[in-house]
Amino acid sequence: MENKLNKRERYKAQLKPIDYYKDFENIDFENLGEGDRFYLQDFGIFNTDFLEDEFTLRIRVPGGRISTEQFQKIADIVQEYDLTIILTARGGIQLHDIEADNVLEIHKRINALGISTWQSFGDNVRNIVTDPYDGCGIYSEIEVYPIVLQMQDYIVKNPRYVGMLPRRISVGISGNRANVTSFFANDIYFALAKKENQLGFNVYMGGKNTEVAQSADIFLQKDEVFDFFKAFIEAFYLHGSRFSRAKTRIFHMIEDIGMDGLKAFIQKEYKKDFQGEGELILEKKEFSKFHKLKDKRFGFCYQTDFSRLTADEIKDIALYATKNSAEIRFGIDQNIYIIGLKEPSTTLNSPALSETIIACAGNLCPYAVWSIKDETSYLPLEKINKYRIQVGFSGCAKGCGRHRHTDIGLIGLKTNNFGDTEGGARVFLGALHSDGKSVSRQLFSMVPFVHLHKVLSLIIDLFEKSGYTNFEEYANDILIHYSEDFLSLWILANLETNSYILLPKLENMQNFEYEKKLLKEEFEDLDFWQYVDNSFFDAVSYLSKKLWTVEGEDPHYKPKIQRTNFR
Image (tube, rainbow, N blue to C red; front, side, top):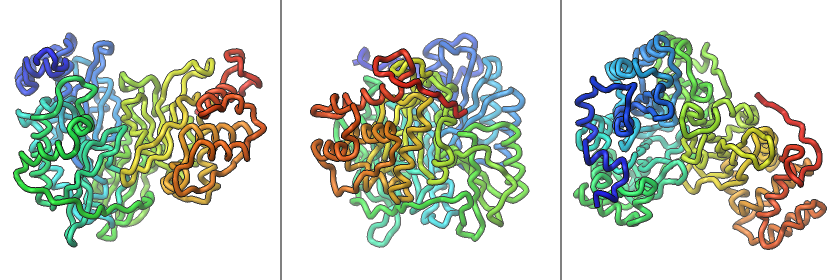
């Protein structure tokens, strides 16, 4: 059995991470082995063997709440060591470009601020997230921050769990009846619900960046959440798979033993009977830049430069919050929320149109091939901002940009399918993300970056002309009733003809012949029909190559493509 354990588990069997930390002061950060790199993640330090002189430090910010003093002192460290700082899609902070000689000192200074780097990477409970308007917004029913702190205090530095879970666990909890961002991408999500006129939480489990969490048919009262959380973690610790790393998430455990099997393991630790789920209390609302709070004051959403910050910017925000007796919170949308302003106005100026766009770390991460935050310049930002369209942009299929939990999802990839196009993005469309009904579907396997602006603009223009004002409602009423290949071909045909032909609203999914008839009615004269047999797949491939291939690289090429650089 020992030989079947995955590599990370074999390291844990040899030496527990908590025991590795006992000799932390003596680590030679310039000469790390593979095992060192595994263990260091449990304490917030990330490094790879092919970038061995560059280190990343991740900071936990439970519930996204950080004091102005802590924020200011982090800025001082960033400035002193010339670091790069970004906000994460879990409401935390990452410091990049740390040199080997400075890792230990910076690690000590950060952890001395009353915040922690522990268990922010690796096989741990990651930063626990909630809505930035928790407890103070007009939609807040139950303040969950005290529960978040209970959970964190139980996990952080607990010898049983430090680095010892089978895989990472992401936890979301919200007592708001409307949230800035959806939490259904978490392994476990405690969502506001009502049962027998009592507010509490429904439990959803098995989410991840590419899947939505499913109802566990469990309702918890507020004072039961922490005990359930402990039982959940222990059940996963005892029974989660420790073999193939590709099959170790809660999602895969549910696939293997079913939701009832997982609940049985949890109940054994919980030692009480479960109540069936209540009514989910979750409304879709639009959040403006200024949000009215319960106490008649206001919250302000400061839009970051797609999560990037500078030391001076942090100091300005911290000083502004201090002068106005306001609070600083981070959202999982990678933006900063200033809570407690007397008026809906501010002297702070957001540097980008990023409020509804999540962009992963990009080239700051070894798994991404592009600087995803820079590639957002290929997007029609004004249109996205106008309609508050949720966009997730990931640098790889791991999905840290949550591209499958948004209205429009993107993965930045390399391609030579269209000649010298310098790369592009895989495009996903139409997640029903607010209430966790479904993830988005793939529309195009690759759109060259040079064409991305035009393609996304057309998609948004079709949405606009449909009369809908909310993209998720448009997806629910229109997009989900058509097959992926049909939608792809419909978009391509509109692109080739410079048309804006709308799709009819359907009550349910129609068959291939119906979709073929729709295409015939509008695009009978186009030349892709020779590739339509029993599916639209080959026609999509043909037409995308025809429209997007650079001169001389493909037999389908006809006119020279005029490239536009949107940077």
